[in-house]
Length: 156
Ligand code: ATP
Ligand code: MG
Image (cartoon, rainbow, N blue to C red; front, side, top):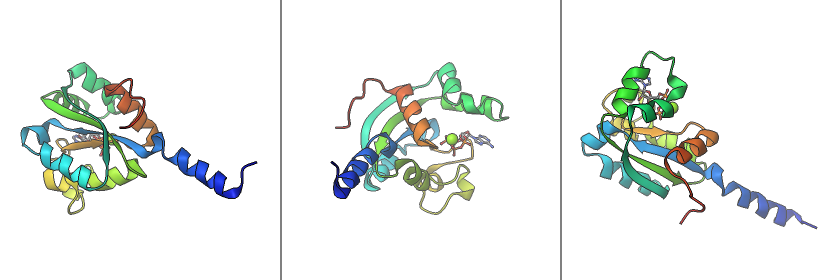
């Protein structure tokens, strides 16, 4: 029979799984402007472990699929064109409370409203060209990670 401590232990174990992952992209503007190294360095220094990482380029179709949730928004075409305009870096990151912690680290969508010291405040140029993507939920983190990486059975 499980005692209280063992039950607590199993809860901690459960919390160490997918809920502690988020997905990010370094967007084409930050790549072009030479900020990729500084952004990755900051992510690592903030305690995120890189579980998977690759540099790649999105076709218009793939960018449209990734941001399909915004299909009806006025900025959708601009977003798809921008996201397929050059190389990106895609990565899966791990940290306790990863989704929320990473959203805090990147700051508000519009860099003009982003808090001092956040990645978007430091490196983004506009609301559209805002340096990085960060998943907005555990569920989307998993979907987005699977969009770029497959066969990822465990972290290293
Ligand atoms: P992301 O999903 O890329 O992490 P976010 O969650 O902060 O960004 P969303 O509302 O999901 O913001 O918008 C997705 C992306 O669409 C933004 O990061 C930005 O690149 C672009 N975008 C959002 N609002 C605008 C806008 N008003 N004008 C132009 N582009 C926009
Ligand atoms: Mg979003």
